[in-house]
Image (cartoon, rainbow, N blue to C red):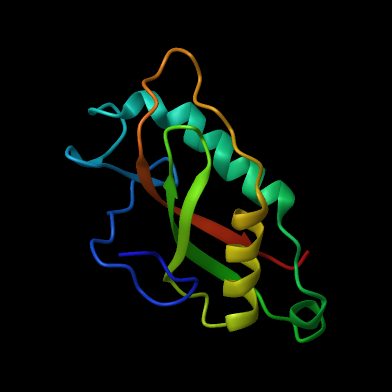
Length: 131
């Protein structure tokens, strides 16, 4: 089953303290310190890349819209984003779509040499805040 750009995704992963939740296929959801914790730095870097690449839609700025979009991302073993879907909407379609588009545009990021490349399914918050 492919991921769509909008709507819920079955099997939502629970929130964890590092701002992301990780599900390793065959291993269930993973939190800090548990199996899969070695991906923490990689996923933290992914979250940072997303926020740095985020384009706040001008129409949303003009209307004063802000919010957090929780997205579910599938990362393939080669570091390519294999799918992205809105898991929890910001309540503003324009922000949800901008988050999905930003993630789809990201260049692949290979896994560090000290972690096993594998397919990961992560849930990350993407924050749109007017400053």
